[in-house]
Length: 221
Ligand SMILES: [Zn+2]
Image 1 (cartoon, rainbow, N blue to C red):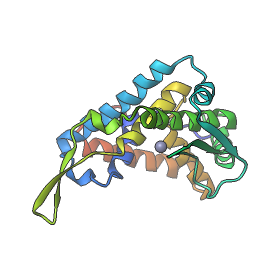
Image 2 (cartoon, helix red, strand yellow):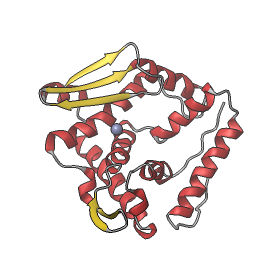
Image 3 (spheres, rainbow, N blue to C red):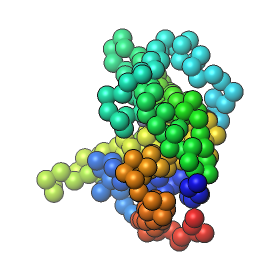
Image 4 (cartoon, rainbow, N blue to C red):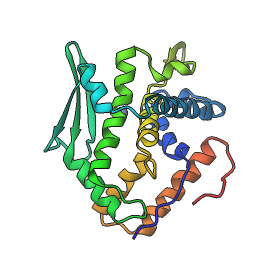
């Protein structure tokens, strides 16, 4: 059985932050502020919705939830379509099943049904953004991006939505680990990599976060 490490959510949130198109313009001293604003937004939304049946809320709001028996690719989990009259959330069941099967061999087993609920909760957070017109990046000032080395233009950090959606899902569903760690477990199993390789990767991710955000490593793993 794979003993999964307990890592702060910031370690995985940082991986999302790094993928933002405007990440390079966030000053190192501000990285932590973007992470904590996004994580806080997801967690407080989860507290607001605790006790609600998300599928019923979505049905009431006219959002169709479709659970697909096939997935267009093996790494797509779910998506929200919000365009004109289309308000739809797609959940791809083969991915939920695969993540559940991968997690079964760990210290934090999850049934595919729980993984499916986690996917739905993630998209529910995006639904909250679309339906209210309030975006998570509005919680922090946009960065000042330089174009052609001359012009400065403000750029929002859109990946904050993703960080918040994962935080919402983790908090609302009471997941034992960050959802992105679940993906790493699946990835490593698919590639036939060992537990120590997985744990080594987690240690490197944690070290990268602590170095990038200027924090001392605290009792990691
Ligand atoms: Zn998302």
